[in-house]
Image (cartoon, rainbow, N blue to C red; front, side, top):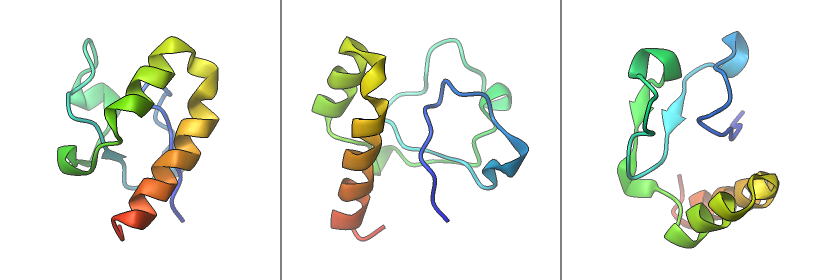
Length: 76
């Protein structure tokens, strides 16, 4: 099962294998704190989605849906 989360959410035991999909590593977050197993910069979401989230974090659900669609388009 694939679940999308914000990197700002605390890692949970049930997360399993964690992949960061972003061009840049988040400021102020260590790899140890993030508990990221794999960092895939090359499949990051379009910049527009990042800008949308920065404008209003409540839109994460919409970004999650767009991210899933993007992964499907890229067959990942």
